[in-house]
Length: 211
Image 1: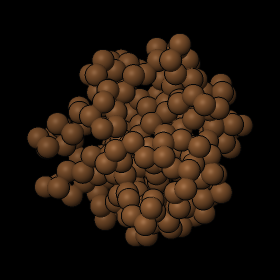
Image 2: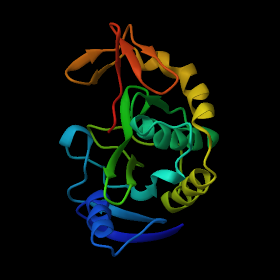
Image 3: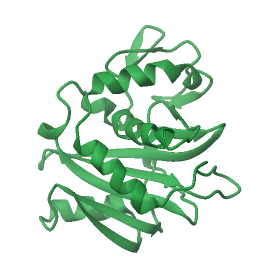
């Protein structure tokens, strides 16, 4: 997959979406930036990266996603692949449902997905803070972000099955139960049950969180 690096963009996500829609870009490719001035976060929020962060977005056609992956759980899939890659390099990071990477009690990374219906394309955007600031944590291993991105895209291109991702995530879901999540409202996850499709059951209601 070809990677286009920029020194700075308002947002790798919005840049990619705009250029997919106007036909300038098409999958497979990846847009990466050293800095963002207006990155996108969950629920319409901004993504606040630190001065040194890995910031990238890439498109994938729906037919190229693992057949056992529900699109509503795409953020879990994309982000857990990164978490596993960090773990293989010695990181103590853990994954918080549905789209965040934490080290201890500090968020260090997040994922957001957007669906372009006309193009039948899913856009994945990921941010990972390499160094910390007073608000956010930092990656706990030394890693060159270009090397990390190349390794991540290589793993993703191999199309691991959702089933295997879920098996690994299920083991550490207990950590997520210590937190709350923004669903229709702020929901405590203490008694949530993780389902095999990536959704949660909370008080007999099944909920997904496409971010």
